[in-house]
Length: 615
Image (cartoon, rainbow, N blue to C red; front, side):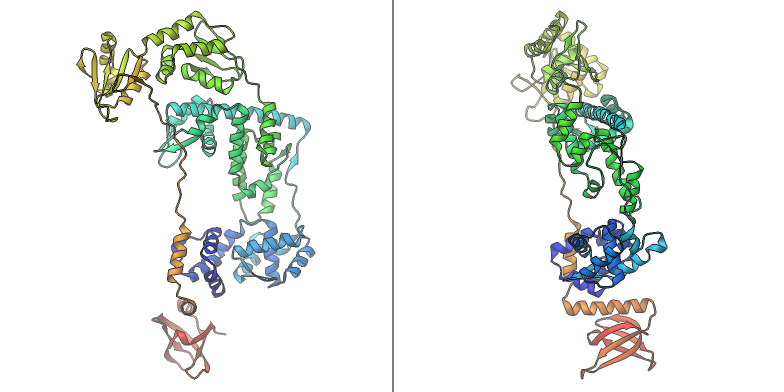
């Protein structure tokens, strides 16, 4: 441990922080370099690190431990003799460097020396059902992935395309719904059941699929969490205007970006192979001490991969293979050929419905949603016009002429008279009711509701829906409320009154119900910084470190009531050995009973040359 503690002390701060992070050392029980060295050499800590190493790296470490302190050439030859399939000396050298960085061994020039505690842990593996050094090096890998038949491959491609289309459509509906009403994040994490049900209905997916799809959208930064609520992000607004293939490319790219490198090396980057039982057997071989941790990681990413069409029935799709190779453009081109073609025209019906003969282009769909409600969202979507839906468009700054012109350009059946009448009538009635602030400088202050149509104003005054607004008459044409103008405006809008918001000058303004948020990347403090600072503060140099090491050895002897052989340098320079049973340590001195002379001695730590267990 002294050797490792000295090595840790010699590292610069950046390397020391990296070591602590790589080995996941908890800072709570570490106060000096000896504590850190002890934490790194604990059997449980060593085993945890070994569990995350692949088989070839473990073979290098185990064989080096069997050889003691071999030169690199001897280590390479021994691995080859055992049948290790990595005979490249450069590859083995790179693995040794990684093990050196993990503080599992010391590489000095051409010599490899594992720490005794590490070698001891590996030698115990066979008694625990884990492979020996020879088995780590000599047992060949099972076939990781099974090829599919041509029929299964065609089915995989069709299913993957369906899932890609469904995921894109569902997340589009998610963004649209969150744009209208954000969803609250529970304090313990996740969405509450009411919001999950609401989003499930809007997205047209099962309840169980809501959370994974929200997670996919969050990783792609299409939704963002702010003030405890999930909302549509600015990136999400732009994403909705992209075509289906480009939308899918964003989802696939974010999935790849969060795929850990070790998982990415295992899964297939070619189409037509299965990720089933053969993959799990390969993972168990590759990470022999890993238990289920790698299986669990692969399962999590495979589930999301299934949702967005990277895989289908646990088999890599052609587009998914391009994603795994990092070629998102090629993946988009592949998926484009499988997705249904988008259309740019609709049929306007006399019953105020709008029917699309196929998947609408994103820009047309987004425009329609501003003044029409979605009735069905399948390959052929349908929408419905109403006075309230058209008022919603007017509230955002649209007008009757622009809506009618847009419909005329995309309709295959012209603009029926009932549609024209509805839109013009809604435009004439829009603004019959006005809402504004009583104090223009105070957005959170009281507000008013005004209208020259006293019948409409009277209906609002007695409407039980608005009890919480505490509306009170101020004049025959005006009501007041202690609630902010935005709250009153959206309450009236939801109740389908022809309401408009106005400023102090009486001009119509167009409020946004929920502000678009941007993902906030919270910078978490690095705990290794404070730990390294503490280690440096408690380090008094070589002399203090040597005394601290001696004190620690004596403490261990006291704890275990162990007799030790202590070599002490006398004032004249001679070294005298005492067989002592330590009793206490403090103030730079220690007290012990001399087993030979049967007397108690008190000796300065500065005079102690070495302490070893008694023979």
